Length: 311
Ligand SMILES: NC(=O)CC[C@H](N)C(=O)O
Image 1 (cartoon, rainbow, N blue to C red):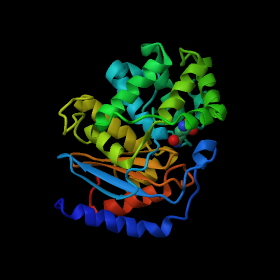
Image 2: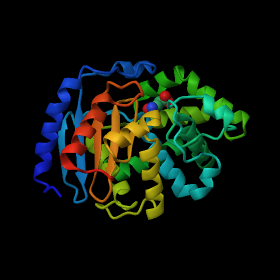
Image 3: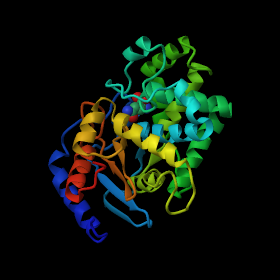
Image 4: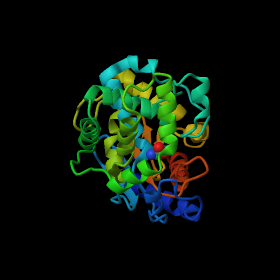
């Protein structure tokens, strides 16, 4: 095992070796507000169990967490509903893009997993039924993120939220299709609005890597000692991150990085090294699957240099 002293050196090397890829990929532009983000940015942060952090790049820069919010909403839903949730959302990789509609019709409105859009929309519907109101529902997830990040200033970007709602035809289509199969209980517009609001939460890699530490420690935050989910639930979340966290590139991510991870079209990725650390990377240009191109590359280089992988 590496001694801690080497981590900064390794992050610096990862940064240098990622530079050649900085021009590759494309920023998400189907959400117009996201297309305005400066594409030439890179950050990577790690947080260890003793709270020590190491960073490289623009680690204080806030970015839209987008689909990384699916990990938080799924965690909240597991806390509240436990295994009942699996009646409405599955646990298999979809092998399809994050916003795909096709499988949903064949599978009678039950999304394959909570980390594709359809799955997260169902999870959001379950949360909305519990909280009965968009603001309460959103604030609960936001407070959870603030608590696990140990940072009460975390918020959301209203422009990104509205921009996505104005252009959210596909997600509305997914929600309507699921409603036709009775897998959405609330008003489609309310569910999708809440889902978009979760996606528009902004965090830095520093905050994100701190926040996800509980998933590296069987559900218990190693710094504040709080148990957010049970050992078994933490295992389930990590398993789904590994098998479904990168949509139809989840196999590719497991192959080259070998860690449970979750990406978002804002350019962020979070990865878990069980019993060791949580990692966050940010770089807005995406590969063809909608995952951060440099972020994925950086994680691959990091995993190779450190030997940290679950395999
Ligand atoms: N992959 C993603 O990050 C997708 C999230 C985005 N808000 C959407 O619904 O399309």
